[in-house]
Image 1 (cartoon, rainbow over the protein chains, first blue to last red):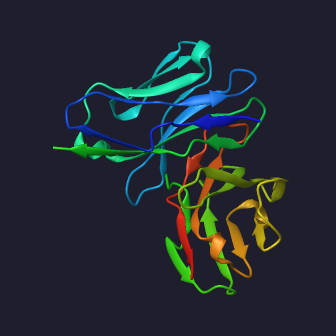
Image 2 (cartoon, rainbow over the protein chains, first blue to last red; image 1 turned 180 degrees about the vertical axis):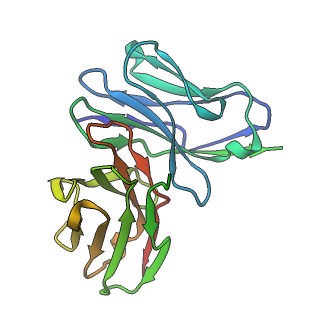
Length: 113
Length: 113
């Protein structure tokens, strides 16, 4: 069975600082990988996705993520965090031929001025 | 284009009562999914419709939960009778035929007291 681990439950960064949110997955092959964000009072919004090809993918709001097969990781990064990035971030995987997303527990990001 | 819409946004009910959650997917999206996040845990898959047919309901916790999608448009998720452990946020998502990107609604926060 596939699984997703987000080891950091809560991260606090200063505005303007860089950010990296960790995600490790367990799956027998290369899955489809996603990062979603949930801002307060909002639904889940897709930030970016990886299906194949270039292992560095760009998303919305200045986010990027890098797929590393050897580490079974798909970490999310942003070079300079804005106060509006405060939200909860979810990593998810989708097995080939499946429609079920498997989510991590989420990482809550706080941004201090 | 309207996104996935869920009603109500919040619901507080007493144990033993019935609650019905509604989801309106994006127009033209044959695939409709229900997910649930119980406090402090992962977002977990409940079930998947293709048009009006249930394709996968392996995530439904028990027979107190009933999902329908009459006519292949909107969907309802009924909990009867509700128990305390049913509290959480219920997300609906939809995707295009053959699509791997799911678009989520803002969720319904259900509190059973």
